[in-house]
Length: 146
Image 1 (cartoon, rainbow, N blue to C red):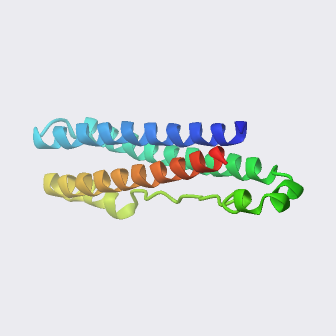
Image 2 (cartoon, helix red, strand yellow):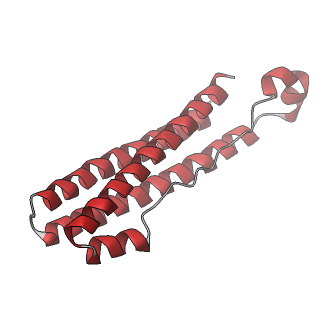
């Protein structure tokens, strides 16, 4: 259905935002290792966090679009074909991990070591979020195939 395809596109957009967040995070970590400009490093960290929030918004919209699409399955069709309809309607609304105040505090007050630790933690969150969204996209593809 068009709704499932639109939801999958939103999940892809969210994954793309996280991939960009990962690249930005790596840039900030590289800048930290080189003892580069603190200003640029903080700009990169802020941009990374914005991209992570953008991914959450895209993922939420994907869930909304998918919910609407799956509500459009006629009840008579679901009743007539219960085996086919059994998995239809299961919508995953992912809550992606974000960087919070603890990460910001380490980046601001932790010096180069705090920046390195916070950057590694952010990288882990980003990778886990990509995995969550990939699973959501796969589940949506299964719904679409039904």
